[in-house]
Length: 145
Image (cartoon, one colour):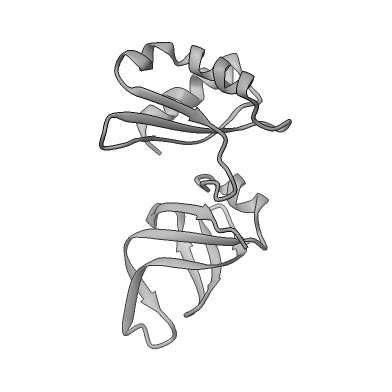
């Protein structure tokens, strides 16, 4: 998790404690994109409140605050636990073995999220079942079925 995301999460925890910061990413064009969620859903009014709370960041970045959409990012163990049984795409930092022979390697896996622990996720992908530690996940999101 980035320092910027941690900072945004701390602000939300004190001002909007029910807001879950799913992902805060700085794009190459200088845009800071923040995906949020809320138990009652994400409304335009909530996005506006969060944008106001992050007002000082608008001085440094073009700021986008939005709902995660159908292909929502998965960044924390709680996110993965919530969506066990759903299809996800997981991209790793380094290539990982595919299948039982481990001769082929890949950095992107798509399949059903079948298990989650405090240290890793388990995905039933085309090449078989693969366990991926959180530390090796570069990016992940749900995939529309």
